[in-house]
Length: 338
Image (cartoon, rainbow, N blue to C red; front, side, top):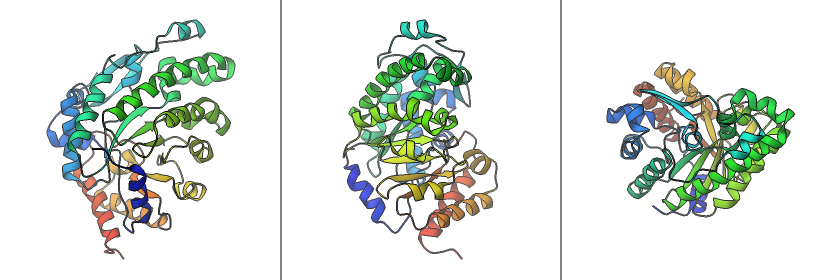
């Protein structure tokens, strides 16, 4: 469903009540009784998982599955699948300048790209009471999966031109991919750039943010919001991330989000950052409630704060913990807390 996202952002900023937009689709898979494997290879099941979350929880927007292997697979990477595991990239596609030069930029009909676009189209067509946010990997994190996450850290120092050439190809593909999500009806996109979280501020700008900005410039407008996610050590990267021009910044649980909020203009949305594993998956429901209320209180004076998970909520999170998260939000909004 088309909507003016500038108007939506204004409504968030003016509301006295907090929104929650956790990156959360795996509970929808569980609610539908499907496996992760079946869902990430079938656009109808993917959509139904997203729909199940929207029908069950008062999320401020619907998010699609965060599977950061989709784009690498389109470039030819081998992907390991498990029945109830998030898919992961195996090995590497490129290892030097020559192999990067030979690497073809894939079309939108490669691997599971079309499935992701179709799932987003179905969600945008069906879910009308909240924005639908598609998702994709960021350029540096995609390059790292193609080159190898460990090896790319050395390569940016000893052969930076090769990695910049790889980033050009990754960015070219991602621009066309995100434009296709926009054409499919999505109201925005969450760009996940976790590997950039291990870079210094200067390296993050050179090898990530300038390329993310090109994506933002190509797609963001009144009808389409870009949210940049980084769940790494982002305390020193806030300025670089904000420099992309993304309308929203999404932080992981390692970030001091109150310090980040203090550095970010009020017209940029800030999302975060309950620990998806240590709290959502592993803690008690009472601990989830406590952590949620603590974060809401800490960010109280910032109207641009949106409650979220620090990253994708993983498979097998107890549903009572998700209930506790939303109940804490409701109690906070309605003044039912001490």
